[in-house]
Length: 355
Image (spheres, rainbow, N blue to C red):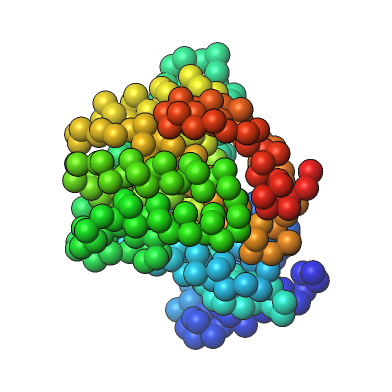
């Protein structure tokens, strides 16, 4: 894609959205490449200069540009900008939003513009401090603290009704956990992903035995160390809110534990989990159920991307290669007593995603 055309489109968007801005200039617009494959979008960094009320202002920004033209990405980012805007207003550490829309250039999906946080991914700092216990523990403790703050966040009633409504837990449902699992099961059955259907059927049966109230809160949906930035000032900032919603906080906790295990190791993920429980005042039970549900969610999320468009197959393939499917198979079998095949090859066969 020609950067000049993209730059012109961005300038037009900013001018239309902010009529008080003058002398809008976009510079250093560059497509980024990351070791971690981005599934939904291309990422660009750029600098924005404006004149507002006779004052010159400069911003370092990030552009996320959808890979395809399907509307699913639009829904994710519409939710993301809603959640981030409200959290930013209420003082939680998220980037400032500068723009969002369903189309920026032809033949591409939605776009999203936000403040670029200068610093490093927390994941990099954790990996670089494995032999420095004091620094490592400080990073892990702050990460756990951020997650507890989010899950116990209190701003106003509107804050507890944000995110993607189709995946939201509400106490108004007679059995919201079962409804959540049933939605996944319908999709697994539809695409004839038999292994995942058997896992979800087992979870559905177990969900009806849960006799505890929902542990509702604002959930990030993808809370992991790759989505936390440590600023040059030392502050922490949480990014990538496309899957945020009101839901049971145990979904966030066990998703975090799972992804951090794959990104780092068992010791790091378990230490974060222990620090979270130490800070969290709520007593959380039924954790094995939510542990398996998080693994099922990972498989179904990747399957949904694969069936959405072949544009995503290469990225999904790279992602599944970095997942310890052997561990997932063992853990799911231990908890559910199901006999499972090799999960990576089974996933590829079900979805058509090739190596």
